[in-house]
Structures are given as structure tokens and as C-alpha cells.
Amino acid sequence: MWQEYFRFVKLKPGKVVTALLGEIDFSSDSIPLEKIKQLYESGFPYLEIMEEGKKRFGGSDEQAIKSEKKVSLKNTPTNRIKRIRSNS
Amino acid sequence: MIDFSDITKNLLNGDNMGGIMQIVYFGLYEDVDTWPTKTTAPTTLATAANLTGDLEMKAGKKMYQLYLTDDTGEFKCEMVGEIDGHSFVYHLSVFHPGMQDKVVGFLNAIKNENLVFIVIDSDGQKYVMGDALRPAILASSPDGIGTGKTTAARKGVSMEFTAKTPRIHIYTGNIPLTEAI
Image (cartoon, rainbow over all chains, first blue to last red; front, side):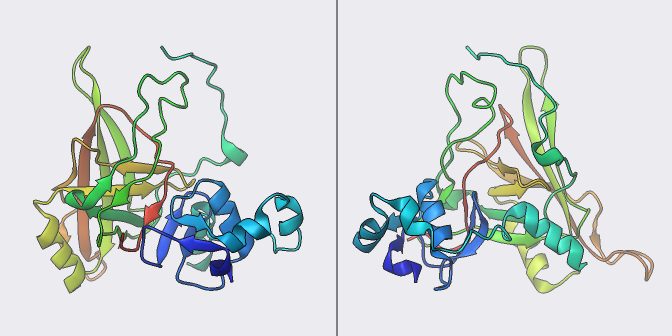
């Protein structure tokens, strides 16, 4: 779970339309860790890294994320629009 | 002074779709804690367009979603003023289907209220209506509020919101849909 490594801050856990990856519900436990890491590294203001995260990702980030799933871009605003259109 | 550069076609992935998303985001003007900042003395064309930072809400406040029928929403920037006094007015027009209590209550609540909107266009680019100096407001109902005359008419609520701004800006931040702590 991503909450072992990062902390959601400044907002109650819930939805944010992120500039990088579209809408994400941060009350969910199942957000891919790579997605969270990508947001954190982009300067996303609502995530803080915890000690466990620093241990895991500090120093050799590339190695640490190799085994993680690739980032899903299905929730970017553009892709959401395409999905809405294809469903209508 | 801005360092001018060539302005080429430069369409990202060739995309240039018209219209806006089927959702716009709104909040009360007085609930905004921090506004994204305008670049002072921008040195490039891009920095003259982009806001920096996030729109953040006060504790216990958040932004909300307003649904609109597809292909009824439009975001426009109107240039106003005279020579040496030009500025812009943002216009957001939307049509919300139906006359359900929530949208009627929304109209009643915001008809004279100061607001903020974030609009996302069909290519994912965002615009904020409202800034630290001026809010967005409900300006009119260009296509009316009502049932329509015929059974084939479109029943619902048409709304146009406006906001005055000295410059047109692109918002590059996030949109909080959950309460600030």
C-alpha cells in the first residue's frame, strides 16, 4: 500500500484532479505506488514522503521502481474525455 | 522584458479539439485560501501565460463539480477596453440538463454570489476564472431556464459566468475536490 511510504496531507483523503495524472481518489488503498511516486516527484503539494519511503526510494530510485507497474494514464483529463465520448 | 520567440503550429500530438469537458469545477470565492500566482516580469512567452502554484481552499472547504451536457459548454476570452487600456473578460457558458432541485438550489444560492471556476478544455488545458482581486459571477442565462415549448425541447438550466482579468492565464495546478484541513 502506498500509505506505507507516502502521506496525504493538507486535505481530507478524497479526490483531487491532479495536473499530472487526472482525477485520483486518495482515499483508495490501491493507487499504484509508481503513480504516487511520480506525483510526489512532480511537486504535487498534497503528498509527503515518510521514513519508509525515503528508505525505499532514497538513493537508487530507478532500481526501486523497476518492479513496479507502469503508470496508468487512463485518468488524464484528455483520456477521460475520450472515454466519455466512447461510452456515449 | 519578454524574450520573444517564434510561434509555430506546435500542437501537442497534433491535438486541437474544440469545446470543454463535461464537468466544470466551482467554489465560493470567499473559500479560496491561496490563489495561483501570476508571473511578475515574465521573460518568455510561456511564462507570460502560465500561472504557478495551486489554488488552495480554506480549512473545511473544497471545490465542487458541475455537470454540463456535452457540446453545450464554451470558454471564451473577450478582449475589452480601448487603446492602451485593453484587458479581458472570461466567459463560461454551460447547459445543465433538467430542473432538479439541486441545480435550482444552486442557481438560487449563487445568483448574486462571488465564485471561482476551473475549466478544462478538450485537450486538458485548464483555466481559472477569478483571481485574488476579482471573482467570477453568474452573468446571464443565454438559453434560458425552463422546460422548453415542445416535448422535443431541451429542458434545463443555461448559465453564463464571467470574470474580468488583466491577462489570459493557463492553470497548471491541481483541483482539490476534498476538504482542506
